[in-house]
Structure formats: C-alpha cells, structure tokens
Image (tube, rainbow, N blue to C red; front, side, top):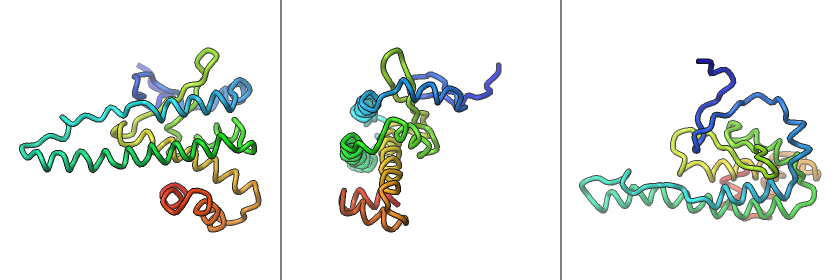
Length: 177
C-alpha cells in the first residue's frame, strides 16, 4: 500500500492529498460566496460530542468534565460566526485570500471543489468536536490579518489593536495573537 501524499483520515473517512497541485485551477472555479457558504455549513454542523465519553461513577464530575469541553466548542462557534460575517462583508477579501488563509491551523482545513460547489475538508488532529470550529476561526482570522496588513497596518501590534476595536477583546485575544 502506498500512502505517499496522504495526510490521514478526515472526519468523513476520505483521505486528503496535501500537495499543492491544482491550486491555480481551483482558484478560478471557487467563488467567494460559495466558499463562505461552505464554511458557514462547516461551522453550523453538529459537533458530535457524546456525553457517554465523559461518564464516570460520579455524575457531577462527569458533567463538569463534559461542560469543560462543550463550553469552548460553543464559544468557538460564536467566534467563527462573527469572523465569518467580517470576512464575507469585506470586498477586499477575495476567494484567493481565503484559500491562502487555509495555511493556518497546520493546513488541516482545506477547501475542495465538489461538482459545482465547494466543501470543507478537515483532517482531525485528536478530537474533532473540540477543534473543528477552532480551525475555522484560525483560517478566518488569518484572512482578516492579511486583509488588515494590506490595508496599511504595519506591525502585529497595529493589527491586534485594530482587531480589538473591530471584534472586542475576547475574539482579538483568542484569534489575533
């Protein structure tokens, strides 16, 4: 069996090739609105977190452990929706910028063409429910970082200050560090 070029299983069991062949071809076919729609669907999907994975003999400890993972999932979902709205509302961020931003989060979130639409392929690191929305936030924040840099913000501190003013301290500290 030859596993050259495969990075592992995605959540749906497909393997993904990490080489960059065909990126120029995909850029022409992918439109910003279809990419935004695909990312919105990716963020909106159910996490798949199961309470049974957290159960021990003590119900209160089990619930506390479960909620310790579940609350950050919900927060990442809120953050991702805010960042997605910011990306979709800026004409200066193109489809090519979003595709280039997929380099963040170790490149595990990829945009792939499926027929006439675009889908998000995510290669899980350890536990899909706790990280898939974080990957979307990282990609969207990278697209916004690149946009801010192109708008004339010279240093990282300038971009962080812009992000604090634009999104508030919480999102800025989590995704623009």
